[in-house]
Length: 115
Length: 476
Image 1 (cartoon, rainbow over the protein chains, first blue to last red):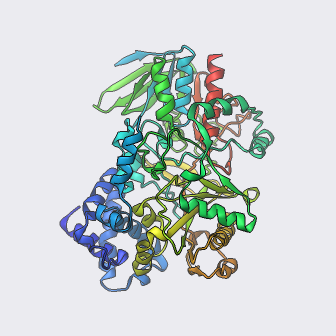
Image 2: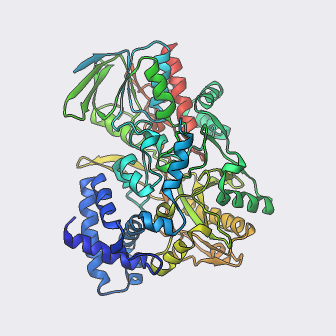
């Protein structure tokens, strides 16, 4: 992703996730880096389409509220953007722990019983 | 590089892995080709966002083209999609077997094979203490309403309820195909080639003669074998066959795709239930099974929940801030529609439109589920149907009154089936009742693609039983 695309994702995710305390801002999580890993794992065509979609949604959201985009022709695109934002933001370790889920505790217990 | 074998098996999922193991144990020289890598339990991180790019084909980004688009996650690695499934085990319903006999001429008695695979993969009912509060509340709610429900059977040994079956079991408790059958195949002498992609099926004088595959280092592996078993999965098997000019005579290859569209609703409780604790898919509600509607548990860590929770912005955030108090449960419907998989410009394209009848099934399923949630003490219920507001105070009227169109439903699907369906008539099927490609001796298919219709239940036992039946027939 380019620096412009990274900034666009942070702005779009901030709108779609709408974090407030105690949740950290999107820029204070590892959401962008995680998104880059996800895009790299998918087909090149998906990556290009998602990056273009991200820039498009970022531009539109500067002019209209998200609710306007979530209706009509752009609804499928907004659903994809929301899924990307939600998965990559809430997958941050600090955010997961704030919500009560501790993956390291799961792993520690698993290691004890693993054959 | 060229090797000689009696049988070459393409794929290590629910179909390929048992075939490989049982053929090897019968004394055949078996070579197994697996496109993905080996992922041991010690490599799992209990973090869905991190595991999806590692374990899911195309990073979990496969989706249907149609109304609505439906995400279709597939596994990629030793074990195939069983590596990332929930482990739920159902035998093929008798009504489905009866339909196969009537519609496709398939006279299948799979009792012995069911027993064999269930023993091999350790199928047993989820004990209540491992089911998790999320699922136990649904079971309690169902019991209060007099609705039929129970604990699911699944393939696990030593499970402690890590809650991340779909993102790689970190204990090694889930007895997926790569955990059970592939070690058995290896122990019996089979050669397992990971990171190796089958490209050409070699056919000489009308008979299968082997497979040519590409290796991770750019080389070519040629396996000479008189028996070839294609088990690349419902979406990839028809593409591989078609690319080799095989199986297309009936016009059915790649068609008849069913996927079991599924979705999940959320319930907000007063008390913490920690939905990520316990077996995510541990309870079923089969009250509406006769109508093609099954309710099954689904739950996971916050990132998994966030991705599939309806709404966005502040409303979504409030649901997430209450994640410890938010339950979830799924609705899965038997398909009324058929889709198709094909290749356009070297890309796999899955075409599927949700049938309006199935949209109504979702509405019916969510209505029952909402009643169950409320009976279990939920304060609010959120269903993934556009235009249906959050249900509160036990009132399901907005859902009852809704006229739901397919595009309003947020759906996923986990069970693609049928794209190389079995049948006795070569004019309407791709493989015969022995799962051999019509007209090509020695070439077999053993994965979800041969399953001729939607099952209404999770398919791994059906696929494994059909694969075991094939292995017995070959080695007899």
